[in-house]
Image (cartoon, rainbow, N blue to C red; front, side, top):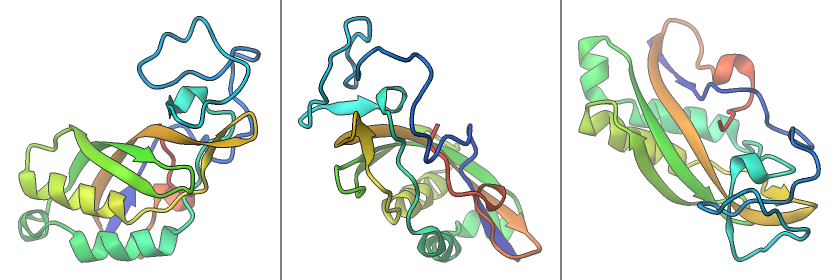
Length: 160
């Protein structure tokens, strides 16, 4: 039995821009109606404000972490589980904070999802060519598979 990490969302990784055009970056929690012309490297930016999305850089290491941290309760029960995790990625692409946004209902599954997410490394998110701190929501699914481990159907993990 192998586990699969499914970080399924719109495949936006590596996207050079986003719909909405000329509006400026939006720090997390800010009103996006004003917009600004220059990225503020001290702010945390929501994913929708990034002009370049973070790209998962260590897919093989994450697959190993998934195998290592596959929840025993799921393995024993032969079931799957999913947790939505909010992450803060620094200007170097390192996950600095991770928290459960939507619980799987199992503390063991949620803790395993956090361990897997903390092992992730990304290319940094950017606003107008400047690396910034970014907030992403990542769904993490633990699924039993009979074949080799896969991530997002063979694609890099995609934040949503």
